[in-house]
Length: 175
Image (tube, rainbow, N blue to C red; front, side):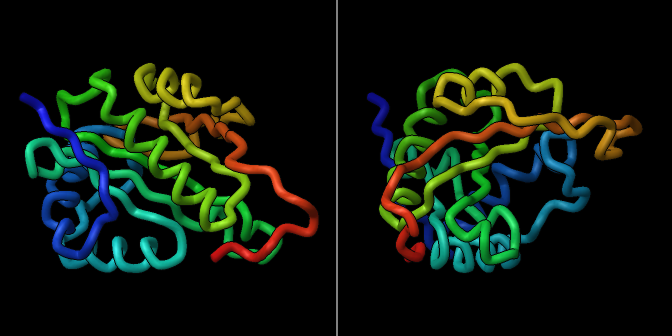
């Protein structure tokens, strides 16, 4: 029997997150990182973004099999109510419902913290990611053409966004 659990990540999850991410870095253009981060680097990312936004993991029977997180969209102050979101699942776990559940939990956390808009970029082609984001209410906002060179080819990145919350203006500061 499969037991899935979504919870806040800790630095103790860094090694598992780094291992999930590693094949995406080395074998795909889904991420434009070229060198996989170490567990120590991943722990630092988890700590930083857990404090300001959110970083969640998906466990299957006690083993981390996916993660999702929010980061600042841009450094300028006017963007502070918007965030960029990303999700990575262990290879072979697409279309199992874990990604949707993980993202929905992330959106809830980000909304509680006062964020109003989530943006996500997807290296193309990536039908699974495009489909997941569309199903979760993301709408296309543009495509950067031939923006990244990886694996001996140029790649496009499609950008999407979705509202997280509406609130009175001016909005309260994100927490």
